[in-house]
Image 1 (tube, helix red, strand yellow):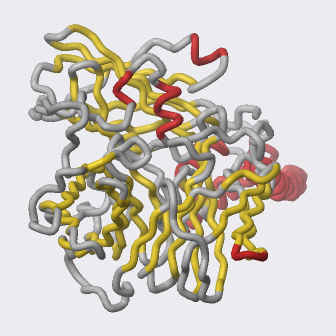
Image 2: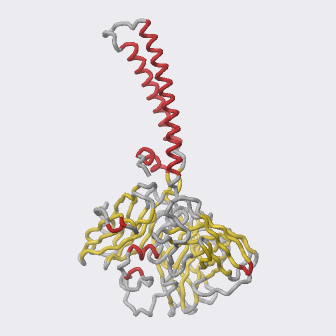
Length: 494
């Protein structure tokens, strides 16, 4: 892509970022750089090239300095990182750091954090998918201001040309003869034609540049869903054209599955499935459905390309009541009350599970858009004690999906954060910290490997105000539990 400084500068004001999630572009991470525990937020750039904003809160008191470096996740560029930038401490809060990084091209990146302190220097990398998603019209106030300014410049230029033709060669104070006045009128007419033509041609150029840039706007994969014989869900992916390197046959496993599919009955949001279709052909997946009540369902399919770029593909399907195959393996389901019947404000912190267990959202507090928070959920047994038989669910203490009730937000979150775990492991191939238990990396955690906590935490921040439903999965013994919680999120503080 050729450099187009003016176009990129204006688009920077009006463009929305792309994300692997739906409507939730910011990256939230709970990470370990050696012994240093970091809470990280990366807000991706609005355009490419563009600037990513980074916030870090150190949970370790002995951190003295943090630097950040943007590095491609894969390829030759990943071997040649640029000079790192030092993060700043903008306030008296010595645990809080901020920084800014240029992301120069579309694709899979990683932000490499180098942390220095009393235990030496250690690093951790957080993957960052980078792409611009859409453009919006210029704000009317800015457009009006630029139009008035342009009109005044054109009128002024015409006046300057007329004055030059009429009086430039006259001595000071001399009245211009009629021939000069005639020449001035001719020059002003010519200048008017030239300037108007320039404005019109400039508009054509602008539209051409905008159309050219639109080729680089992120276009998500499309998914057609259909119900085949024997209650088999068939998913067929299509590439509408966007990035020439994107393919439909380069998906890599994430938690041992090529696709993680959330199926949510809509608009009730009272039934949810976390399923794992099997690849059938290039860009095609099949799945034998379990028992499902009739209704319309929204589909959210998470995949990761081999370069580490994650995508969430959205689809829908309407099905009759299905008597299917029993859930097995990592597939899970949950049922709750319709979202319209749930409480309309605050949160519901307790969810009763079908087998007598209980899932508790611990100390949710006030929820504010764009504010990073830690969401902790505890699993209690039938005696209201922490579950003694906690097990890993797909290698992690739990999974969560944050879904806005208007469908504008979907985010699949892990205990490590909002990144795809396959990309996180690619960014940190030498580090054992990415293995899902996190038991060896949680501050204060000291327990046998076969004794897992009956608690899981997720770092996340709601992207916008409104009402959300949160689906949380934890496992004990051979049972995968699904808790369903509602939350009301207040607007971000100005």
